Amino acid sequence: AMDKAGQFSPPSNIATAITEAPGLSWSVRNVYWASLEDYQSGQISVDYNIGNPGTGLAKDIAVVASVCTGGVDVATGLPLGVTDLNPGAAETITLKYLVPAGVDRFMAKTYASCRDDAGRTYWFPGPLP
Image (tube, rainbow, N blue to C red; front, side, top):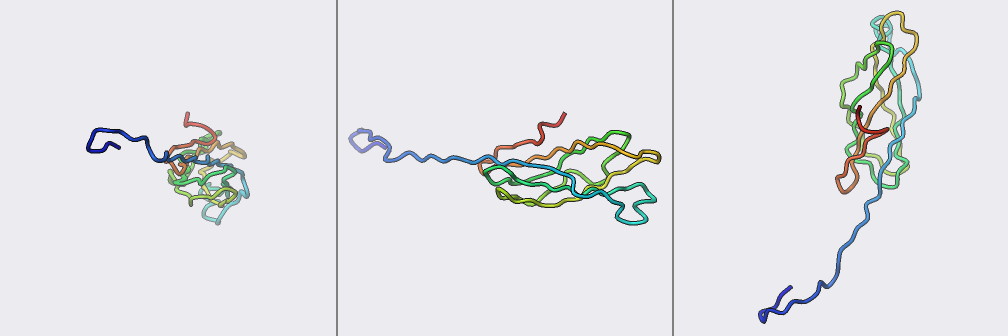
């Protein structure tokens, strides 16, 4: 600040803040055919547990991609928004996959993003390939 005489004064206080980092964890809870129609069309459902083991709020969580082996494609529209998660909280979400005839197993690497309180973006398990 400067007064009328042109004299400057030092700041009275300096505001600081520390933003805690969110984290995302991902695990499979259940794999199943949700209906006879899903079975007949090759759409299998996978329930995932998505959690926040970090120390800060995970905001604007979105499942953005699921890269699969064996010719399997994700049938659920992505990106899929997920509820904001406080530290230690978890949510169950379901993704459906189109499994071609003859495929008896596949792997899916699923990518999600979130933001912290300061608006920084975090990718899990890492950036999209």
